[in-house]
Length: 300
Image 1: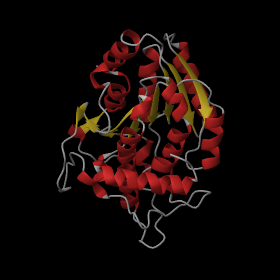
Image 2: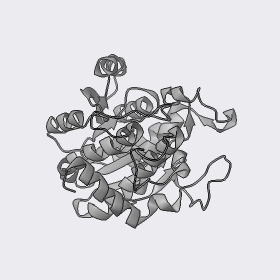
Image 3: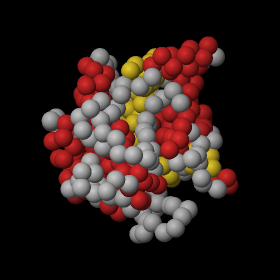
Image 4: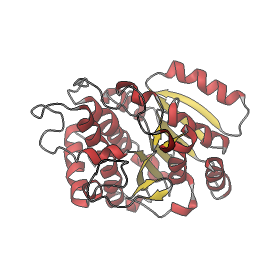
């Protein structure tokens, strides 16, 4: 089904071959996402902290002889100078930006070179800076899509408006992770409200429980086996939102299992389902947008 979504949307329904960026596209769910796009004939750029390792993987994919192309570029989302460098080296229209890379539940408080809490900076702020920097190239595509990988972790915390960097609030790994994923959802709401005139749509999603390196700080995946997915299954919602004509006019939403997720009025004790109202609130999205652009010293 993953291949069908991508093939139908990229290969058949678009007249121009897609140009796609996938952050963290050389491992786990990101790799499955990259493979699906390349197999469908897209030109994919894998943006990654470890380009040498990714180039080996890219060569393996290319050796299989798919119709698309793949290239690798260095990007460290936790370092804003790296984000600026990536953007400065991009000079072509961009059909799809998949904000996939992330870190989870880092056991101790860590900060970026700019002094930001690492999970907020990597999962959200770096992606926000990347997306803003690439806006003009997304606008050139006349129908571009921005897809951000969020998580049910967003049910664990709203954005901590007065202290997102944990300078006063005692650091908690899951609280920090939850905040960062809520911010990813709010970014899609903000893009929907601010960039509609550019023909850009944006949605966020939950991949589901997939065993990857993401869980290295949590002792591995702890979700019951019957609720787990393969990497390909986890990537299916990303591919749907990035490529299917079924959602070409949908924007500012949160998806799970290839469907728009229901609103959750409380977190409960699991299994966790749905999206919290605070993660889709337009006022929250605007507030976060202003805070983030101020942090970055960028215009919206």
